[in-house]
Length: 218
Image (cartoon, rainbow, N blue to C red; front, side):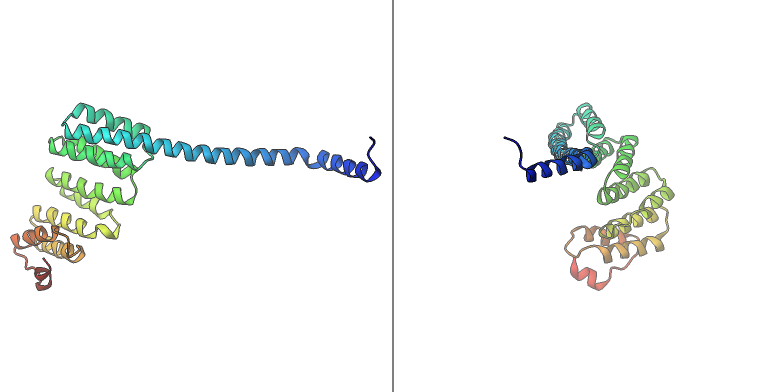
């Protein structure tokens, strides 16, 4: 059946509109669908990455428990090369660094801590820097250790940083500065933190006096 005049006019208008805007509209629609599909794909990718990284982190933990250095090194390398953008990667670097340090492999410990500093978020960076300063302290690289600590800006790590700084300064026989650092560590450390007692012991060992309020809080 032939279109009536109104339908023919509507069809003509549509054809004219399509000739002018149809191709552009199609591209916009396709782009939108592609973006939506890409977003879903990215979310799936992220979930898949997190799941795979979690499974690999279990392998890391098992390797540490079994003291299987070769397996730990393989799992760590896989984690850092395949899942560097997940939180499990810097966690693995910290675990690998601790294992290496306990094995007196300071070179590997430093390399893993540096990796965590370069790839972790602010929290992991701070933890890695405090631990790296400890390794450098053992190597008597005092100035480098202090430089590493100076880069930590996260306020929640102020106590740990000051404590480690006190250790470095005490090793340099800068006892007055070390006492100041330990007092700062006490001030910044939560009163319920059992680590306060160790800070107090170190402070007293170098002739420092623990404030009365700190003693009563211990």
